[in-house]
Length: 213
Image (cartoon, rainbow, N blue to C red; front, top):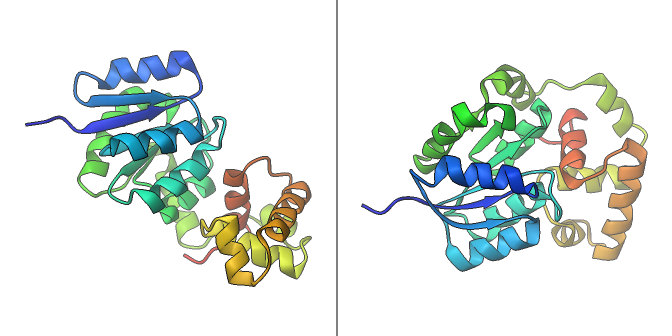
């Protein structure tokens, strides 16, 4: 019986090699990459069963995961990260990611997470379960709600759609505006709320109550 095929993504060489060493005895690691664009290319080339990807790498691992869910829905995505935000974990699950695993728990949990993904189940690191479920059932942090209230109506509309995982092109289509205008709004929103990535924008949308559960 053939082993499940994996693509691994992390911009830290030591971490990437550690992941390969941890997983290659049980799985067939078909590619290791270090940025979001290379990850998407590897998925298109190898059609792996599972992707194990860092979030905070060049090319935005969160955006790459969302893109993979669009172009290769049969490929399961396991996100591996140091970011222990329950809101970000909740956003990942809404997007269709199979597992959200903290790097500090990788040695103990990663194989379990991959097996859950292969079986069509979801997996969260133990320390995130309760808070993430609270986010999924609608709890909102007042601080994030306050930031959202500083946005214009158009910016809120853009953020709501970005928070649902839509691309800027898709947001433009939904709002009948140009992708260039969406990009302008996106980066203005990032300035207002202090977000540095698309993943953080999704977190703001979740914690600000803009994403329906």
